[in-house]
Image (cartoon, rainbow, N blue to C red; front, side, top):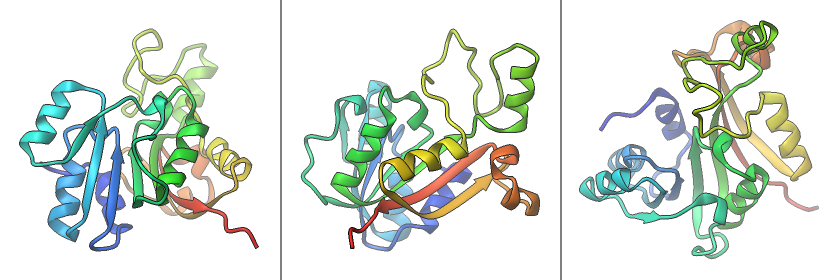
Length: 201
């Protein structure tokens, strides 16, 4: 199994020997690599049965589950990291998913397509819903129901009292250019965040 580039960046944020929960883990590639590189222990949650079979074949601990129904099977602070890649926009209640991530984990990591990217804006200006490399489905055939921009996500973090620890804003080739640091909401196609609960003083 090989990692997508956003997953490879996430791997750099994970401490060796950590406990990891991967939400919407797909075929389990990220957990397999984290186990190989960093000796993590972890679980995946996946709804697609074919992906569950792939996870089991790869030796990944996987649970069949619907993320919109919460993470009630897990106790508070069960994991060091809870990861969700390219899935947040498909959640019915993204804010509740973020809360659950930070209930069961010390830190959360998410990646999502940035709806504020200039290509999306241009397509909206021409009167069409965007279709891009990272948003490949047409409006009538997509699992994405809550598109957000980088600004939207940071506003959600502020509302939910979530502290952003690290952020990467990258293009479709997962490159972070100089201009992207200053105009991430306009130039980044993918946003990657690491965050935790704000500590109460």
